[in-house]
Image 1 (cartoon, rainbow, N blue to C red):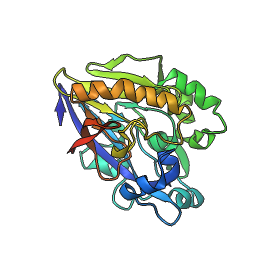
Image 2 (cartoon, rainbow, N blue to C red; image 1 turned 30 degrees about the vertical axis):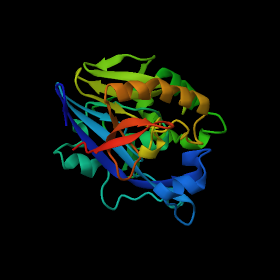
Image 3 (tube, one colour; image 1 turned 90 degrees about the horizontal axis):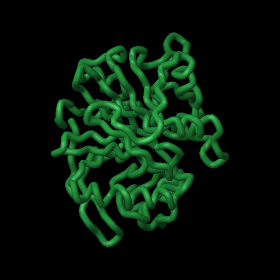
Length: 281
């Protein structure tokens, strides 16, 4: 897919599982289990999908997945699966090495979004993309340093502390155009300072939804994750974003849906729902 000067590619980094009830909050099991069947531990299958933006001399990555530096205990808890692909092998298919990535926009620092920022090389923790600048909301960085009991388990400091030690991070304060045609929209329901990149050339617009809309079935207003620190603010964010996305027919890029890379939306009884299913190759 091309938007303006940019060529866009979905980057599959692997699969994992999280608790289905936590992924759907107040939505009853009888509803979500039909579309996202759980395993024997009530976990549902999730993707860790990133987006590569190439153009203007840059290779920009939005989020970088779970990474591969997991011990056996955590691998069993989250059922990480890199049997089909991982971040570096997916980049290799596009003839890119880790040194070729120029910029990484992290929507936030939860392990399933920033885990690929570092990797183990010969038993030593290293930055995965040594030539890249990393971009993060200042408000979210501050929260990550003082997380609540509710979201503390989502932060793994090996994922991102090394980036700050090596001064590779640019902290962004609020919504702005980070690169030509790439604007950051900021939400504060899932976590403080969740930034959603929006790529647009005035005709075609794609929003990287991150955890505002993790799965296609999360489009209706009541579908809000139990992980969100302020669910009513998530609701307000969806009511602010989705009508514009519908009116302007934005493409919504889904980070966690195991089957759907992207989609447009249509009106429904509970606000909106998924419409056309798209691929970003």
